[in-house]
Length: 108
Length: 120
Image (cartoon, rainbow over all chains, first blue to last red; front, top):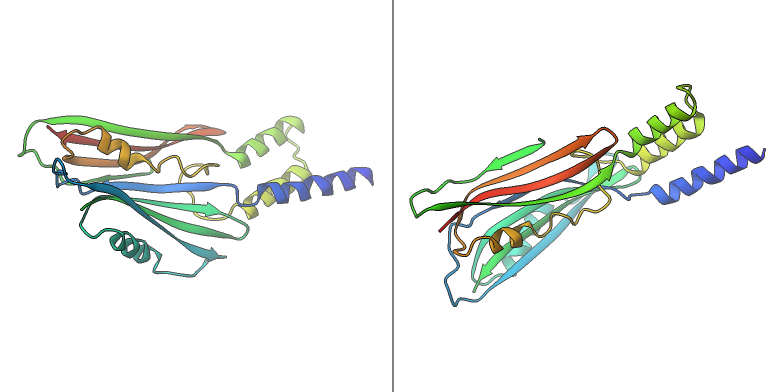
């Protein structure tokens, strides 16, 4: 009886502790350093991130990659160069979030 | 090796200097650790409690994975800045984006590496 209660409590604690605490980075890609940043010209780093919720394999927001790209472009009035893209997943209970993080150098 | 991508290679603009950025995150394969612990503690017989724990772990951490899951996904967020900082001219070519891991059965080092050449 006591052993069963202890086991149940331990498993319930595990349920609460283990929920959605892991992630996985699938790919990080960097490209587009063709243009040297001219001396004396202002530049800044810009970034955009979006995510897609997937429940039991059913995906919502299938435009999340394009959304990240548009968000990155919207943050830069000048030339956007050296764009890096990170694709990762946050794991959770019967579902997960696919995430895109885009970063770039904005030359103004 | 999980993934590699190679970009354009421009050898026409000057001498090339190899540069590299490598970031990694150590992690533990929780399922393999539980299975191993269970086998050791129960002399290979297995226990219902650990089996239940492994099932809970699998249900609570569903989703696609590359290598072993990590507990911090921010370890690769500054590779662009680090790569840029290594090249004074700002002109970088032959970029190789690599996703790999050092695997030690129940533990691993999940690695993101960017190799490139800086045009001097």
